[in-house]
Length: 182
Image 1 (tube, rainbow, N blue to C red):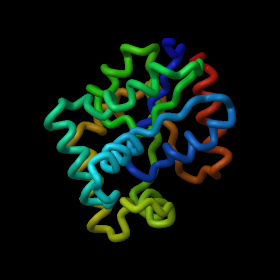
Image 2: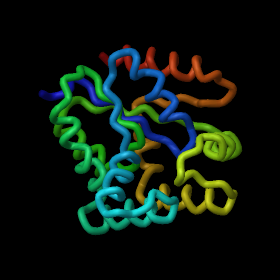
Image 3: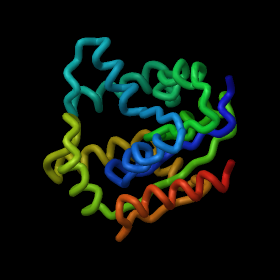
């Protein structure tokens, strides 16, 4: 079944995309996390989910299978979904967006946050691949920029500035935007 609406959450790591996705799952939206697709692929290859391994794997998949490779990994989840609205957490390139457009109407919602806010959030989040030093944080940002995330952010249909918002305000703002697209 084609989803009526595929909302792609884009933004630099730590901006608040996963916070929005987690908060909106209770509203009946299906959530597909692009980073989890890479983590699942790492597991299939018996790779530990470290920052280095996941970063290298993400780049390898794109190099071997094209810039839309990560979106290709989530195709089975989209195809089997019966949800009217699917949130794709972590779209990083226009090529991924092209892949997703084959399954429904795509809207891009960018989430912005300051560098300090993002770094602090990532330090507290606790995923194995989250950067714990400024150097690792900058490496990750540069890797993300290298795969084209700035283009998807620039072409977003709407952007939320996650500065001074509470978690509930961020989620509610995203919900209202998405509801206006339905």
